[in-house]
Length: 150
Image (tube, rainbow, N blue to C red):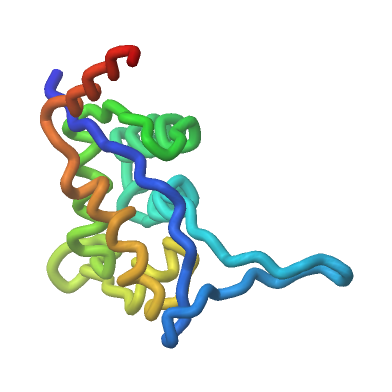
């Protein structure tokens, strides 16, 4: 069965309009830390799209993707069956198309941002996360050659 190989990107520290780190809310007495976005959180949010729950095949795909994404860490390479990869890639290509055809077609506004859990202005900062999925390769990346001892 053909597969795609996704390399999980590192977390991203979100920046404001002045390219300063956005600080996460801190509890009283704690120091605020920069707000980071994780690939897993963003991708798991995308799995809530209605098209990924539209039939039994989509639900099976959704469950498989959820297991693979939840278990992934930055730098990991995850192997995704081609059909399952295409289902989620179709959401990235046209997130606003919520389902239906013809006069029954439903559209949304800022669906991608809503599913990712970030305001639309933050989406350009998440492009590496989304591209990691859409640019997945047909072959696993080659492992770097071991460094010989000095």
